[in-house]
Length: 268
Image (cartoon, rainbow, N blue to C red; front, side, top):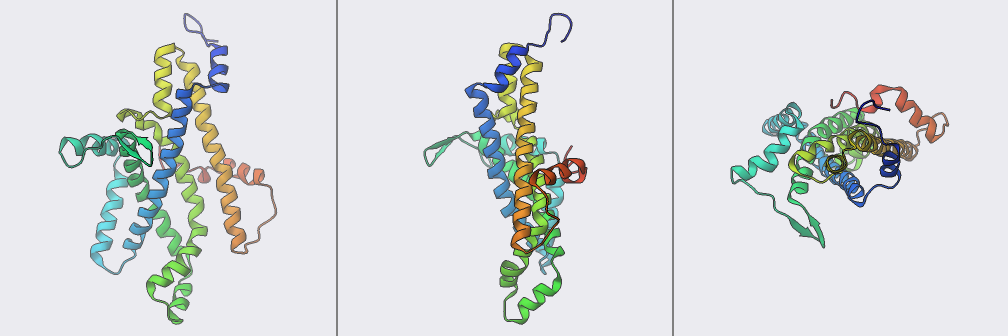
């Protein structure tokens, strides 16, 4: 218990943890769907950039390299402000609230998805490029020898095999990005962190509500860790890879014991 006028309110802590407000749950939901949508877009862009970096055309390799260099070399927060405020200030593009399939999407949410997707795509391109390079070159040569075009070989032979190498680091990066959504509050995205700030301001129970938020972030990343372990096992089975039989819980436990699997080097 804290000394002085500020004391830890146990009942408030447990109430907000076990029976969170609708506003908090809404922020939680936005955190999840923004992360998922941004990741899907990032994988698509990242694949295109990775292929461009493997191109025989120097101009494509140069542009793709510049893209990765800029996005990996500048902070996400700076990119977020440039996309949301900078584009509008220079009259290049102004995000506006819109309705898609009956769902209202705030301008700030659109900017958040775009920025996260672009930022993440730079990391995805390197992950995918490494995955493609891990596939035995003989596989591509064999595909070409039976009459496949380079594009067909990449689509039907190389990329499917690269997935096995891509999933582990991709999953780690997604975990890191999901935590990075907390910076979206600076442009007014009503995700979990911003809602937590609002509850803190109105109730003055700062420590309690932020501890609740931390536990919810921890729950999200832990759930994804189990999903990632399941995906990796499923891909291994599809390729006929036999590993020592172990439970899903054991696989997840190994991840927490090895910091390389937690994406700690990805972002601060």
